[in-house]
Length: 394
Image (tube, rainbow, N blue to C red):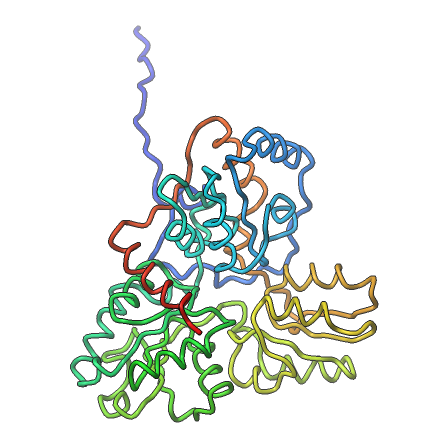
C-alpha cells in the first residue's frame, strides 16, 4: 500500500478575502452605509506599545495624519489632526517625511498623494476605508452626465464644482472642465467664483452641501436647484428642467450626516431646554434650516472652544468627534451631546483601527511599503489644477 503525498495547493486569495483583510478595495460599492451602534473596543495595551515602537523606529521618516472622525486609539498616534484638506496640506508641508500614513479614507489619501512630492509615499492602513459619498459619483457616471448636459445645449454654460470629499477621478474631471474644488468652509466662495465663469453649476457629489450653500448662503431658491440622479435616464430630468436650473446637484450624500432629521432637532430641544443646535452643512436642508449654527468641522470645534461655560450643545456630525469634544469641554461645564439618539459612527473611518495602523507602521519599519496610494499622472495633473483654482480663490 502506498500513501499519497499531500500536494501543495496554489491558493490565491479572493477579492472578498482581500477586502476583509484591508488589502484590497471595491470602488464600485457604496461603503460606509452601515451604522454600528457599539462603541469601539478599548485599545489593546500590546498594540499601543507596538505602535509606539514602530513609530519611534521610523522617526522623521513617517508623518501620521489623523482625521477628526478617527477613533481615539488611532488619534493618539497622529502627528497632526484636522479635516481632509488641512491634512493633505500638512503632508505637503513635510517634504522630508518619506512616508505619509493617512488615518482617514481613500479620497483623502489620494488628495495627499496629489499634493505631496513624488519622493513621498502615501499609505492608507486599510484600503477598504472608503467614503460612501465619494463612491456615489464615478468617473463613468459623471462623463455620462456631461453628455446629457451637452445634448441639452447647456454644457458650455456649466461650471463643475466638486466637494473635497470626491475621488481623484472626479477632481480631475472638474479640472478638465474649468471647475474648482471646495471644502465645507469655502463652498460659498467657490460658488461665487463659478457663477462668474458661467451661468450654471454642476455640484458634485454632495447634494446637501450644494443646496445649503446656494439657498442658505447665496439667497437662491429651492426651485433654482435640481437633483441629477445617475441611476435614471438623463438623470431623471428633462432638458427644460436642466436649462431652467442654476444649481444641478448630484444625487449624493454623507451616510452619517444624512441620518439627522428635523425630528432629531425637535426632540433634542424638547429634552434639553436652552440647547444650541450646531450642525454640519452636509446635513439635510430642513435640518440646517432648523439649527442655530451651521459650519464645517473646524467651525464646530472653534464654536465650542468659544462657547461660555455652562452652555448646552447638540452637535450634528460624526460621533467620534462629538464624544471627543464632550470629554474635552466637560471640565469647563459645557454639556455636549450627539444630535440624534441613534449612535452612529462613520463605519469606514472606523476601519482604520489600531491593528491596521500597527500593521502599516511595522511593515514600513521593516522596509516594506504597503497599501501605497498612487494617483496616475494624468489624473493628478487635472485634479491638481482644480485644487489650485480653489487655493487661488479670494
